[in-house]
Image (cartoon, rainbow, N blue to C red; front, side, top):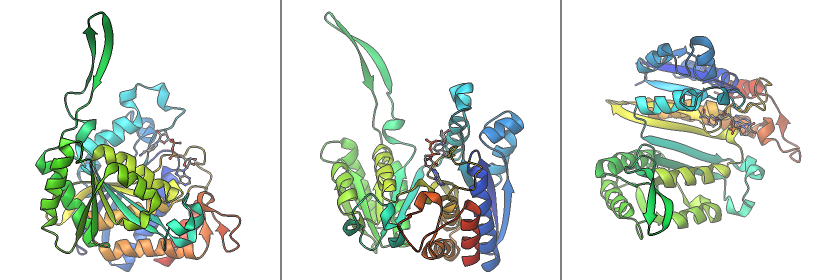
Length: 373
Ligand code: NAD
């Protein structure tokens, strides 16, 4: 992969998007040099930046650029004071982000959650529950299940003299849908601690029974990876009781939505959390959109206060999952750890009680990570 040109679309978006994207690009360029990569990175407006530049949250030229690229590095979109001024379907999150997910059939959402020991105070769990630091990966199916299954409706019911409404959502999964997300989880586990915990509700749901059966079958292709099954209610409990037992957590859409946020809370700040949404794989390349787990943080935008680490770690995921450049991805992750180890802290992860901590801005944090590459 390293001899080919990596075509990346960089869509910074709104709020803190441009500030944190600047730092991520800086770090990517440092990695490009160190590993003699060839990166073509093209920036384009999206979100309110897109509306202001071209009248649409996802301008045609931006979409065209994405189609010509191998991966999208995305910032965040939406501004709470401007969003309500336009119709829902034109608002940035729906018209840009959801549209991109649909356009590129991004079916797998990956949310790594890491809590280095040095940031133990940022975690809501007591230190003895954190072991030597937390490191888990939630793999969530993104295009199936209850969010999209049909029928999906609210209907009027007449029962004798009583009238009321009834709402119906339907959970549907087919074997191929479960298979492809299971492969993503097992492949990710091969690069990690080689354990997949598959989440279901097989004691109650037909979907759970099929999920468990298919995941067990797919596991046979990955003999080096250990598989365990866990009911979703127990998983919710285990995440706060003993989160160190998890490596890769594999979930369907609804369960993954809930558990990935629960897991994210363990890291202490949204500013630390990257994510990847993956689509189809052609040859050695997987199309993906990589973005921080947080939003545009308008409360701190434009003030050099945002933590750029989520965006920088998103670019590490881009190298890992779209281009299989594991060493380059690890170089970025190592540089982030080095900056944390030096005591550098943006406001969201700053602990005034820590004498070794030095409060820094967005740019200074980016500089330190770039220097550590
Ligand atoms: P938010 O994630 O933007 O902010 C929540 C809190 O986390 C704020 O206090 C913010 O300052 C803090 N925070 C977030 N990222 C941070 C970072 N990198 N460094 C330091 N602190 C950080 O959520 P919100 O306030 O609910 O939403 C703001 C806007 O973002 C809304 O318009 C929303 O629709 C949009 N949004 C976009 C996305 C996306 O583009 N994927 C995701 C979520 C929210």
